[in-house]
Image 1 (cartoon, one colour):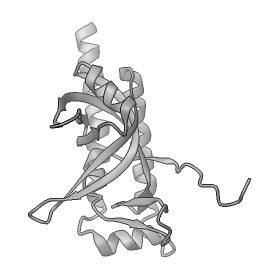
Image 2: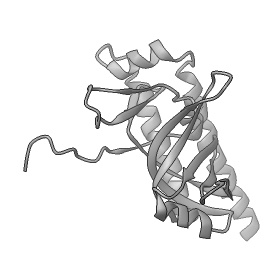
Image 3: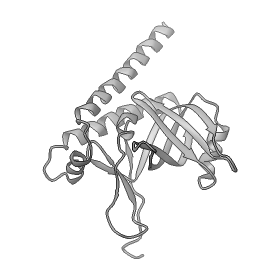
Image 4: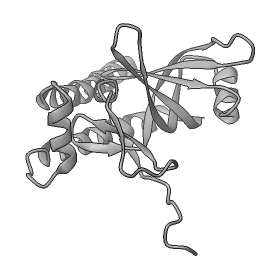
Length: 199
């Protein structure tokens, strides 16, 4: 095997609040096929992301052929995902699923500049599958841990992606600590509501 066979990038976990702020993308080489990374504001690069949340809405927005849009909500906000003929499995999943449903999605960040100059961030899905509430809860806890790890490493002088984030984003890193707290509180509230309902 040749040494430069591309390996699949690890799929990063990020909450919607941070992901939707990740409007800056870059490549690390001039190679045409070099991966495109979204720069997470907490100081990490993401070529792929792993998301679990509630699919709240699906819509075929295609004109000549099917092109599906899905909204996936986590405790901090909404992810948008788009799938068409080049993502047939994901498009089929969005067509067949009945919202609301807990789903897990792996995909690539995509950015789109609107006419007013703002940048929308979405996910081009590789896979979408139905999961249960426990899987969603575990994802929230693990994503909170990963986010806090990135925040803890943010001030390390050798963290090149954190330095890039400081250069390209205006958002203070504390914003994402607040998102973590919100996400974990929402789990606690759900748990106490469930306990009350079962009492």
